[in-house]
Amino acid sequence: MMRRMSPREMRRMMKKLGLALEELSDVEEVLIVRGSEVIKIPEPTVSVMKVSGQTIFQIIGEPIITKKEEKIEIPEEDIQLVAAQAGVTLEEARKALIQSEGDLAKAILMLTSMKK
Image (tube, rainbow, N blue to C red; front, side, top):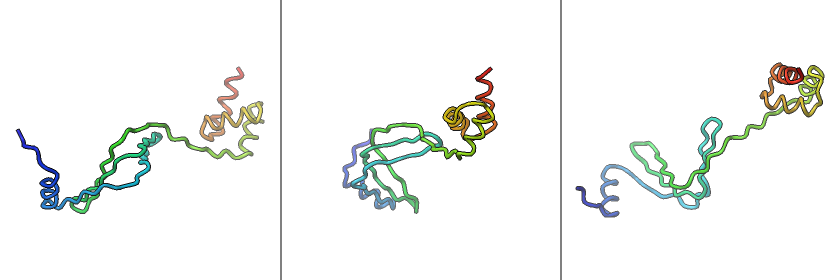
């Protein structure tokens, strides 16, 4: 069984190994973006450790996981083209283009296949 190390002994040992640990103050939130997933950690405790030229961040807190919202810019002429080709309203064409991530052919195909 290992004996517990006091914070002072721990600091001495870390210094001997060339480790520097520092706590960041006033951190409001940490965001980690993974593909379409966003991990948000509000009001975390963040420590920074320097080891052999590398920086390691330790983040402690309760994560909130959400999907990243991507705003797709749909040109007005694309909306008009899809509406004309599929015989639908501009709003229906806009929704289909957003759903198809701006792919004109896919949007037209979706709208025309729904009519049948």
